[in-house]
Amino acid sequence: MLVVIADRHDLFRQGLVTILKELKASELELREASDFSELRSILQSEPFDLIIAGLNIFQEKGLIALTNIRQKYPDIPVLAIIENPTPKLVEDLRHCKLNGIISKSASRSSYIRALKSLLLGGSHLPPRPSKKQFSYLSGPGLFPGTLTKRQEEVLYLVSDGKSNREIADILHLSEGTVKVHMTAIFKSLDVKNRTQAMLLAQQIRDKG
Image (cartoon, rainbow, N blue to C red):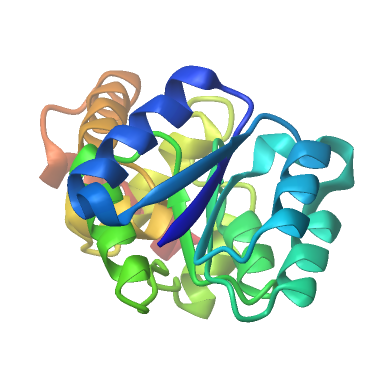
């Protein structure tokens, strides 16, 4: 099995190489690219079984370049790695018809699940937020000026009854990152726990 890893950061590529070798051992051949032109050249040279591409290599070319790769190599699974996932960006990536989407800061276990699925011919796509959730997550927020946009997204999903694991899946974060945001939300809103934060957010939602 031949896999190409394209990302600007050497240490990140090395981390993926380690995980892939653990999963596939001697069956695996790897190629690495640090920019878009290098990736394009590598893809033209050999028939690959999986493309792992960080969005940071596309720079100003953006999703158009990723879409072009998908169209040119429709039979090769593609896992996109995103550094600052937002619901809109993930929705845009879905339109590229990718096989997998994962946050760069996702946990090691999340990467293992994603890579195992793609190497076996499956997919790794996060759950889609409901239309109501998507509308809010793309909107102004409940506490503008008090919480960051990411904290607003986390709080809204808490008020919707989502667990940390579900929030992590929807926002493409690790559970640890969700917990960090929750701690910051408690402090900013002067509440003691998740229940108080949820009730406060629900009150604001109901008024809206």
